[in-house]
Image (tube, rainbow, N blue to C red):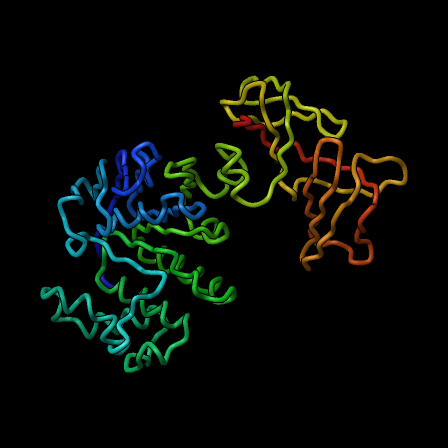
Length: 360
């Protein structure tokens, strides 16, 4: 596909309040501000009802904001209808026309735009080839697998060469194996084209594997905007730490934070850990399962195994301690030495991978 312009998207204090809701209730989208760099892959992630899809629909022009601004390269998008915005969208339902062939589905946007009709056939064939759909142009949607239908939807979005590409949970209708495959294909295609992309999902693994940055949303607001690694290892709140992956949160009522570090006592050992800058005396220590070592002991340990789930590449343990239930994941375990329920164990935490957070 030919070179195309790549857009920078800026959202400023975006608010969406639906007319039939209680005026005292929090808006569906509550003051969202984002700056998406040209060529960036940004994912809006959060639980159902957090406002991520509503935000995407406002960017696309399918919803009208109550207040705030949306701009692409400094141009006010609120003055433009959806079909005039420099965007294309890939839907969860694929939204293919059942009565049109694959070729005509992909060509649809080009036929609407008269200026692009001259090289329509060439552009469609290039788009089909880029999505591994060569030779399928004469087929109809019902003759394709779910994965092939999603590729057609992607080709249709890409062929119009938008400045911004929007994804509304596009992989949720595919089975797990196809989801992983399409995830890789979407990321490779986005990197190759360098197109600015905003992606909505509730699937953490999708967000972590696809994104340059992740926007974690909760109750209409942005909790954190950061790289996948930062969101996982240095969450901005307990909500983010709990929503992304699995973690144990232990109360640390007497933590003293200095210069972004704190000394805490866990399982009988004193640890020097990184701390969130807003952490005060009411704090919790976030411990990821893979940072916990589990060792069976003959004498009294600091915990007892309450459950063990073997997953092939690892085993997940739940260990009951005086400080609460602790999650631990042991990678590549010796299947002949798996710990069983009731085993007394000692626990050790890798301090470099623990993080102190404000309780709230």
